[in-house]
Amino acid sequence: MKKKETVTIPQILPARPIEKEDNKVGKFKRSGHLTDMELKYNYPKNKGGQLSIFDILGDKTIKDIDVSGVDRSEVVEGIRLSPSETKVIDCLCKLLHHNSEIFDPKGKDYYTGNLKPEIVEYMDSTTPAPKLSFTLYKLAKEYTGGVNPSGKEIENIKKVLIGLDSKKFLIRYTENIKGKGGEWIKREYEKFRPIIHLDKATLSYGVGDVEQYRKSELVIVLHPIFRRQIDSKFILYPNDIVDRTNIAYGSPNVSSVTLKLRDYLMRELSSKHYKPEIGVEKLYYQVGEKWMKQSRKSKVKQYTEKAIETVTNLGLLESYEIKSGATGEDKIIFTLNKKWE
Image (cartoon, rainbow, N blue to C red):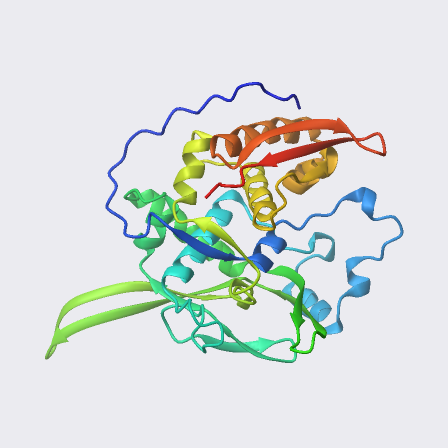
C-alpha cells in the first residue's frame, strides 16, 4: 500500500430520476453496539492460548447453535454481512430513526419504530424490539440512495431481507451502565439469533362487499441491539450516506472492504479519535478477514487501497501514512476530517 499524493474524484454516476426527499439533509443515529458487532473480527496473532468460543459460551447459546443445524466450525462471533446486507441495515437504521420517538430516552416508545414494539426476553429481563412498517418500494428507494428503484432492484432487496430473516448470528456484547452514586454495572448479552424478523401486512379499504384499495407493507421486527443504549452509544450518519458512498466509490456496487473501512473510521471519528492507528495486517483482517483466511492478502491490499481512495473522496479521510511500529511491523496512521458531517 503506497501513499498517494493526489486523489482522483470518481466520475459521478449517471443521472436517474430522483424524487424530492424531506430527510436528505440531516443525520440519523446508528447503534454503537450494532456497529461494534459488524466490525468484529478475529486476528490470529491475538489468539495465543485463548479458549475456543464454545468454551466460553453459555449452555443455552450452545444448544441454540446445535439445534439450528449450523456446523460449529462455521460459527463466528459478530454480525458478518455482505455489502448488500450492510446497506440494507444502514437503511433500516435510518428508517428507525425517522419513524420513532427520538427525544425522550426514558420514554416507552423511544426508538421503537412506527408500530407497537415486540417485548422480548433480554438478559434477565425484557426489552422492546423495534417494529417498522413500510413498503418494499420505500426501502428499495433508500437502498438506491434516493433514486426511483427498478423492479429488479426491488426484487433484489426482497431477497436480501429474506436472507437476513433466515440468517443467525452469534451476538455477544457488554452494556456498561453508570449508577447515580458513581458505581458501574456491566450487563453481558449473548444470543444466537437473526437480527431481523420479516413479516407482511395487507391494508384493505372498501365499501360493502367491494374492495376499493389494497396495499401491502413490510413489517420488520428489529433485534434490540438496534436501540439498546442508543441515547449514549451511537454514531451519527448523514441521511444521504448511501448515495454519497456510491458516488465516492464510483459505483453502487460498493465492496465490503470499503464499507467496513468507512464504518471503522466513522466509529473512530465519533469517539474523537482524529488520528487513529492500526497495524497494516490487523487492518487487513478488520476489513477483509474472510479473504485473509484464504491467504488472499494481495486482494485485500488492492481492495483496501480502493477503500482508502473512497473514504478520501467522501471527505472523511484527510490523509494517511504508513510507519514501522514498535514491533517492526508496519502500522497505518489515519488523519480524519474533524469537521466531516
